[in-house]
Each structure stands twice: as C-alpha cells, then as structure tokens.
Amino acid sequence: QKEVEQNSGPLSVPEGAIASLNCTYSDRGSQSFFWYRQYSGKSPELIMFIYSNGDKEDGRFTAQLNKASQYVSLLIRDSQPSDSATYLCAPGGTGRRALTFGSGTRLQVQP
Amino acid sequence: KAGVTQTPRYLIKTRGQQVTLSCSPISGHRSVSWYQQTPGQGLQFLFEYFSETQRNKGNFPGRFSGRQFSNSRSEMNVSTLELGDSALYLCASSPGTLPAYEQYFGPGTRLTVT
Image (cartoon, rainbow over all chains, first blue to last red; front, side):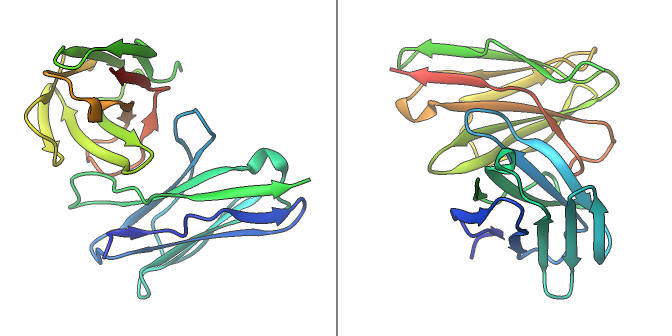
C-alpha cells in the first residue's frame, strides 16, 4: 500500500462546477496536510494546508480533513479553465522527517 | 519577498559526469529540502538541510549528496550520472524549524543525462 493514494485522473469537470479531489494516507501520525497545484512544466505551488479535522476554506478552495478515516480532500468551487493542473496531496507534521507526496490527480476544467 | 531560486534551470550532461545544482531559499528560511520528480516515480524526497546540517535523507544512493551554507543557500551534487537521473530537481524552503511542514518550491532544474 502506498503511503499516499490519489486517483491519477484525469478528473474532468465543466467550467463553473465543483471539483472534488481526494487523498488517503496510511500514516496515522500525520498531523498536517498540504495541497499543492502543479501546472504542466512548472513546479508545485502550495495552495492550502489543514491541521485540524473539519473544513478549512480559502476563497474558492475548501480543504476537508477526516483523521479517523485518514482522508483529506480538496474542493474547488466555480472551477475555471485556469484550475486545470495536477493537484498533489502531502501529509506531514511533527515526527515526520519529510513531506510525502501523492502521485497527484490531474484536473481538467472544460470551458 | 523573493521566492526560491534555482540555478541552472536546464542542464544536459553525459553519463558518468557529475553535476552540481544550486538553490537559494526564501529570505529567513533555514530549512531546505531537495526532491527529484520523474513521470514514473513522482516527487521523491532526497534530503533536507537545516542550519548547515543534513537533518533527513531519503532513499537515494550515495551518489546524491548535498550541503548547506551559513547563508542557508544549498547545493546538491550527483556524481557518476546515470541515464535514470534525468529528472526535474526541485528545491523547497520552509519557514519553520520542523521538516515536514509548509514548503515553497523553486522553479526546478531540468537535468537531462545522455
């Protein structure tokens, strides 16, 4: 079992819809969760992080964390074609020696 | 603040050669991590430096090494290059004192080994 699992996609949604990106992790000691966006040919960009169970909202982005289920998700509301990218999930936190990245989910927003 | 910078941006080397990549973190960040990204393996952790000390290391052979200077700038070196070392090498800096928290990536160095 991989330490971080993400559906590779592509996840295709129409412009204006909600995109839901999911991530499961195996290390119960993970305390912090980071979402990165990576455009093709570019480096990853940190867009959200969440430390506590529940939801965290930032603009059109909402991160959801359920530690009991070892599940973290990213919702993108009112998806735009500019959101088309690969989204990487990375658990981290105290006691871990590094962020461990999932393989990413490729999102395609259709105009 | 200026972001993380990496030089060079592109590099072509021949198998058997060695290469040194450079990274300047965001001002004030003392932790620098290095990652290798390939289409097949994704983003893989190489090592992390904090205050000039290698604090953590990933599962890469000894041909991969690094160092950090007193101004937090970091270099990584790959000796005896192999074709499989062709990848995007990413440096990330972190504002905190712990390794596995928010990190900010540089643009990367695209290494091609022929």
